Length: 432
Ligand SMILES: *Cc1c(COP(=O)(O)O)cnc(C)c1O
Image (cartoon, rainbow, N blue to C red):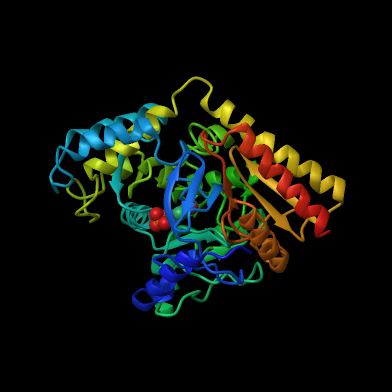
């Protein structure tokens, strides 16, 4: 590994004043036996660290940057916007423009409210679902990430029967998890067991899920599983919340709606919808959304909610998605890389697999398929760490965890994708 002297020095300095030197734990590269990179700038598909080393970036701010870093069209409008003042805490016109744009793209998002992070979006959606249904329980799925609200941070139950979870973080009273039921993903039987339990079925406020899980690596829901959730939610008047903070505007133009032909009651957005700025949203049926204050009894608010600079960035990002064949072209780019990787896996007979949804994918080491969190946990983390270091030292930055997705942007050129594919193939040859 090359020396990264300046970055290392900066990181040491950060560690003196910020816990672990990072403002979000994954950035600390825990378990990778390497110091974190410190980024100075980004342009297109390339990020540059403080030592001037360049990397082809497949993290893309965790999928937010579908148009690449420092996209010129977005930046131009954002700069104009900044000159008009950056925050008012009072209503601005651009909030309506982006809201109408979302509704134009996904008509069943009849009303929407903007917040500043995905965590806030899912937390608010759950509160709204509880306020609307006057029920208490929520069902989530093991390995799905919905931000860090207390009642989402549950340790996955190991068996179908163990639905009452324990906390995966210190600082959370057991009582906070009392109404969270965490079930194995893609398991219709476990879901049926809860909805057919007479003590539970009438008290389930919401089922929340990632339609294609991305936070345990890319693990798509089966269509039947989603349909089953939809049917149970209809039958027992529970709110189906599809958390599209990652998949929204990513796996397809209309996210899970296009991908699975399933309509949520409430949908959460983040990442892409902020155009690289801190913005997120939740929206859906007007009948439910109207329960929010000031129209209804469910309180929810934010000083920087609907911030005009973030809204401008998000609005421009969404407009760019409407270019002809945007998703087709992006998927073709992605396939150029993923076909090379799949070929290399089969040529080397590596014990690995690639799972993809549109322009996001994961290479799982040590598994031939992953359908849920229980299987994802069986991956070979040592080999992944080796792989991560190999890619990084050869100028490719991938998300620093096995259980994360790679993201391809429109800024990834054919050359970058081929270079990346060749590197993966070399690694598989060498370590297999
Ligand atoms: C990233 C993510 C969140 C959390 O969003 P933040 O902006 O990091 O708070 C929630 N749900 C999903 C599916 C995500 O991918």
